[in-house]
Image 1 (tube, rainbow over the protein chains, first blue to last red):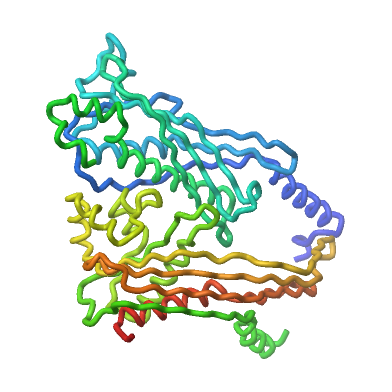
Image 2: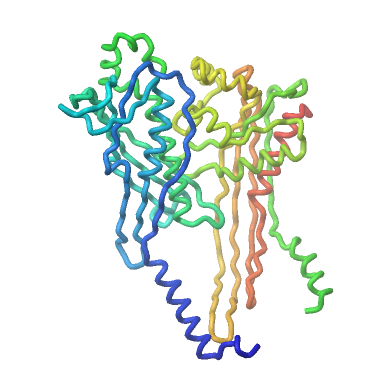
Length: 221
Length: 220
């Protein structure tokens, strides 16, 4: 029994280590890996065969914000996996056929024949936590840039689209957990925004009207 | 401590809650005149405000409150409904007026999904619980011989929620309920902190839930 007990100096050392560990934990990088499943969109599919190409920056998208002071933490938010999951689910529900390209569209590339290829990219990501804003919500804001091109790489349309997600503070919820939830809300918002506005992007609308098999149907996404 | 004393402490702890004042306003235009049958009710949080967010926990609490007291009312979970009708009920795309439902139903797939869910009432809840003023101070220390806290803290919480009831079959607003609750919580500490929490959000949930239950049961 006495063998398992510690002496006062030993206890002091343990406590000092524990307190130091707790203090140092506040200085580390807070890492968030966003993972989620997304629902199939409920909408009439466009009669198109759409190709998709994700470049590495998109498929492994990561945001890093270095702490500006000793009292703050650095943040690393990885959304790549969730981005791919969202856009695959969404586009398969929006278009009759979705094909994944073998390589980035361009002259001389061996790719399947499709009506157009969509290349999504995350231009910018910003976050806010209650410690920054004094408002009891965690926020994620993203700006996407889309390129719609032919299989040969010729541009059809290019546009940007914002997405926003927020989540309230909750009892026993960590900053990381709240930022992860806000990112999922932002991704859902991105999907909703894209699905409801795709056919209204002026260059896309003009392109759809020029296609013989979609001219009549593109008004209702 | 003797087991008898533990029993007394155990019996006293549930009574250690702060006081809460709640006010409920109700305005009903058309309550149901017949049983809900197989129809369902969905309770959704409004999430359009920039500085607050209707808590998903609160929406779940109201749904559970109604479901636990009348099992004939079929409540569809918020996330289940949002997923079933994605992307039409996200904060960016959700209908703001009952008339907007008409436009939504022009989409064939959306209309089919609504038919399969048999939604009769759609209840939108908007509001939040916020922490008000706080006072007092508490000091905690830890040393080789042990640790403890000493001091006193107090804070207030205010909840304000409004529920708007849409009759899905008539595409009309048929009722509106608002509930506010406020309460003061205390935390005295002599070695151990003893939280005496006012269940402000829970009281607001019960108030809204009771009124909705009354509406859905046709007891007006």
